[in-house]
Amino acid sequence: MQNETASTAFLEYGSVYKLPIDEKSSGLIRQTKRITAQRYLSQFLLFDCDTYVEVQSGIGILLVSHDPEKSEILEFGMNRRIHIKPNVYYGFVATTPELVIDLYAESSYSMDVATLPVPYEFRPVLPRIQIKDILGYYYRIRTPGYHFNGEQHPFFELTYIDTGVMYTEVDGVRYRLGEKDMILYGPNQFHTQYTDENQSVSYITIMFNMENLAADMDSGWYDTLINKVFPYNKKTYTLLKTFVRESTTGVPYMDSLMLCLLSETIIRLLQGEYVVPTAQPASVVRQNYQDELFDRIHAYIENNICEPLTIAEICQQFSLSRSSLQLLFKNAVNQSPKKYISDMKLEKSCQMLRENKYTISEISLKLGYSSIHYFSNAFNQKYRISPSEYAKRIY
Image 1 (cartoon, rainbow, N blue to C red):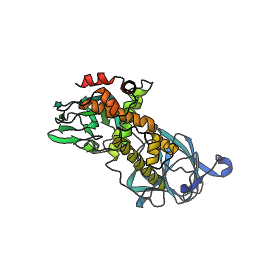
Image 2: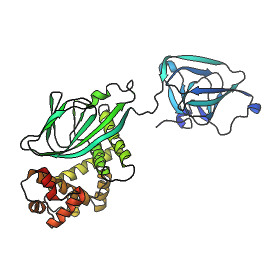
Image 3: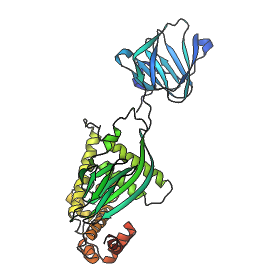
Image 4: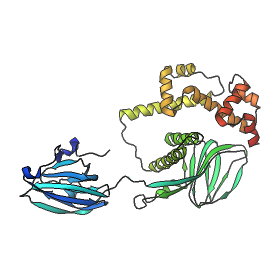
């Protein structure tokens, strides 16, 4: 977060005050400055006396330093009325199209204008990338031996593997995509997709137009995204899972939220190349512990998915109270444990249907459903299709 001139960090350079200056009674002289928005500042002011700045309109950043030649320059968001101590170098950057200030100084002032060795660059908060539109989004299921001969197109395409394994060739280079892996095809990159003879696959495809809005700031962003497989990451996994869920709601502004979720997914992939691990505060350590505990519980459910799992059994297995388990799942996936287990069973049923080894009745029994009727209702409620219709679509 930005510091403001009202913060304690600014006390070294000045302070803020409440009442506007009365020019007649104060004995101070005034100069009105109109500052237009710009990214670079090359000069600082230096007064030998106290000066006072009153913002009349607009929003800006105050830059201060004791020695700008050593690049010791700090940014402060400007409050309405600011007192600046003598012998402090300072300058202004407008963050709105125009910033209007009144600058007060003693009539006997002495002012110097210092030229910075290197112009100071102010970096406003602007979007670096923009996803203009989503052209298509599909959940696809492919049987063993599937082979797509390949294509190229003038837009981005994201492929995220839900279950199974898929192989892809991009401009002649072969990649293996395992469960929860992701790859991005860039515009006009020729790519194929195929499975082996023993492995089916289900995956998400999202096609979209994206552009870089600040190429001078983010050179190399394109190369960061393409020609690589992104492994499982909890943040991107949660974002894509939410994207799929939101795409079926039909509620107002659903499309805007989908664009935001996809944008965050891309940004998280970009950030992954630059984030350097640092010493973690206690809150982060606790979060990591909770993430690890959730992953262990997820693995336990996955390994015992064909058993009649109960919440009480999971609580006992991991020495948790029911309320602690509920809170853990709410924070991790915003679902109850019961709903999460149900979804995992249904995902497993899809996998078993794709394998074509069992009848629907056998799948229902293997997954511990009380009846095939209950299984069919749960399947239809989640996927808006019956298990038998799902199987027909595959085979």
